[in-house]
Image 1: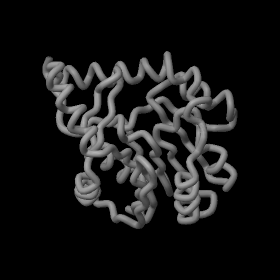
Image 2 (image 1 turned 120 degrees about the vertical axis):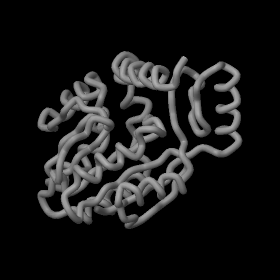
Image 3 (image 1 turned 180 degrees about the vertical axis):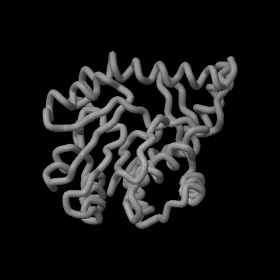
Image 4 (image 1 turned 135 degrees about the horizontal axis):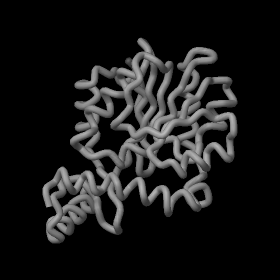
Amino acid sequence: MKRQDWLNEKRIMAEKRYDSIFSIDYDKNWGNIEKIHEETLEKFLKLIISNGKILDAACGTGKYYPIISSKSFNVLGIDQSQKMLKNANCKFPLMKTKKLGLQEISFNNEFDGIICIDALENVFPEHLLSVFQNFYKALKPNGYFYFTIETLNDDEINIAFEKGIEMGLPIVKGEYVLEGGYHYYPSIDEIKNLLISAKFNIFSENISEGYHHFIVSK
């Protein structure tokens, strides 16, 4: 299989998995907010102007909406899974949502802040720069962007790569496609280089178990 065909298939499959599987019990299994995620989000929100507009990219079931909305920010949640958005709207009827993938973001100077938490691991390496560029364009001048990068140790990355090659898959180093899913684990240096290419400035960084947290500015 050609890599582009494989990537197209993986993206379609990811949307179907969230619609048919993860949307059923997402909050039960992954609804808890880790302390460092909450602390970094609170730090980010202090940087946003009063009543500012925030984009919650890959918002899922609205996990972070209560924290953001409690500060009187205007929130728009986007996700490529319609059923995840439906769950968000059932829980939070006032939450504004739109079905939209990270690769299709086309806002222009519209948001004072953007968050993308626990989601970029689903983006293919070929798309990461354009996704960061989409975020940059969507931010207003001097806006802030909080995102996480999921991390995995080198041994697990190497094993996943070797098994993928054995399976005949057109994968690249850092991709984890075992157990039917897809994750990409870029190095932090790769992410920093992409941020430079997208013209972001790093404001702060933090590390927690399994994640690297960035707050960057336009």
